[in-house]
Image (tube, rainbow, N blue to C red; front, top):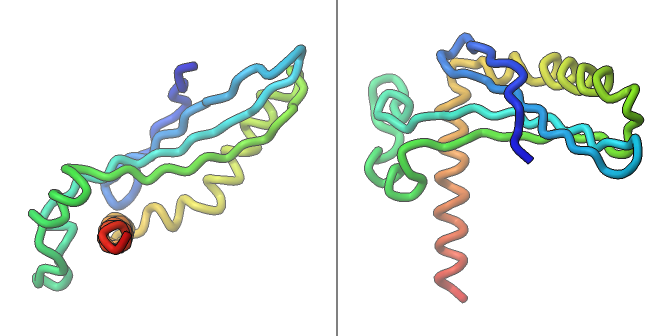
Length: 131
């Protein structure tokens, strides 16, 4: 089933937060209500500098992660009555936005997320080489 774009929010840090409805019918009048939130973060030199000094080699990061990374979270509620589906989806959206929007809008969010993903990739690759 294809995810339906519900809303796009322009964040203060220049990124775009996209909210998708990935809900699906389970059985009878019951649903899995699923919200997917996604931010596409392009990897570039500006994001990998702090106070004008490079934090990481951009080419190394692109080689490890590609031209962009995606921040993605999923929030779900299962076995929701058909009549309650829309209200539950609205509640999930509201809760996500109230708890996460400020964090995702921070000016250093993209930089920190790229660094986190890069460090995870390096750690995973080094662990795999030991096997």
